Image 1 (cartoon, chains in turn brown, orange):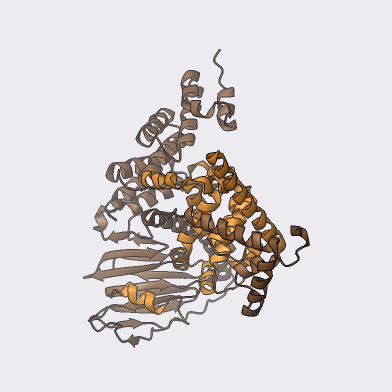
Image 2 (cartoon, chains in turn yellow, blue; image 1 turned 30 degrees about the vertical axis):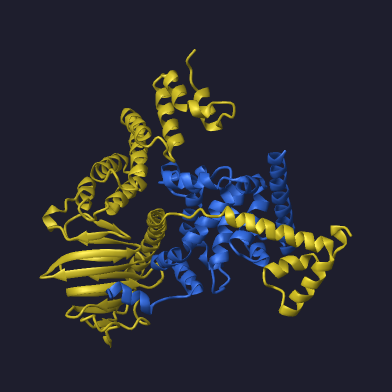
Length: 377
Length: 196
């Protein structure tokens, strides 16, 4: 019997996937004992299965996954922020038109209703109060003793915190809606997130972001972006300078691992503020040379310098990156950067040397194109 | 128990609800879904692609793009096959230029922070696994390797793989059959060579 003419062979896969019922499985078992083709196919599948199990022990490290998690949320958050800004602009324009035509926007303020939830653990001394979610975008869990209120005015929902610690989670909402947490000395604008706020004696003591990102607006100072996993200890308002560089400098104290600082540097780069971004990456590298993001920061510093027009600085930064991280995932890009700068400076020998690993028998097209434009003899 | 722990305890959501929340821009839900499945997606991608750095890029891409594609989720309570399927499709389409993929898909273009190489410990561990079976798996075409990985190693059904890859279930089973055949033949041939 050839394989083609055993019309029950398909049952093997169904059996292995558990798609056959007990009766059908028994029937196929009996058949496979008598059918050479199905018997051989089954033995082969079992053998391959056993081999595959021996070859399948690679797992990601937990630190790698944690690092990747931050990257994912940071990237997704940035997409979200960009989208959100467009909606906010559109909404502002629509509101302006409505106001100018004499349309009165209904003003509706609601007082929060507090529901007391019993502590989930006897060892937990504090009870928690939660606002029912349906009418509000933000759900608030407050520690005992917290003084706060929640109100909605049109599309803007405000959580006023006078004193104490709150855990705030913002449920999915339309882009035209906005949640603002107002503290005595600043406001926090949600960007789709979960975070804790703590305020005492009229000063914000802590903003800790678990998911997403928030923007803190200090009165008379520049905005501060706090990413997932980062904590913002309240700086004296006077220390929060207006310049972007000072913002990054202040951010340096915001979290032990520098994730906020790194996020701010990336944000500057994304906003095409290349020179401040390069300075921010340099500062991050000086403060956190051993953090996982340091490798990316080192490369991004070179990119930011190149984009800012500082070719010499970019060249040095790219060479430093390759010397610090010879196995870098960005080694090809860093080498291309070096080669392009060297080529533009007329140093084709240096350009070729930088791209040597990619110019062998199986030359990389990008490397080849870079060198092709080289005009030395 | 912290406020956060209490929160999590009372707000566990099913995968379909998480994806609905992600579609509406809830980054907290994205974090939750990542915690549930990033490990599985990474492992499946590594097996399909055989490269840790690219696996990281693909996992990053899959989860980063969820806010945009979550609306297309069909509502099944378990999103694992769907997520692994997305990773499989990316692996198929971009297996030759994953380094560039990370740059293309983000607003940074060439400035995108991407991943590192395998760490030395894992590199060593990986090398220990480079036996005849690995060589045979790597020798398979990408289409066959992906089907084999998803079914034999990740435990997806042929119907789930068919849905994930948008191909008929019969095609999945045919590819699986040929993949097994080729691996079996390659290893038997190696044994014979070593025995000769």
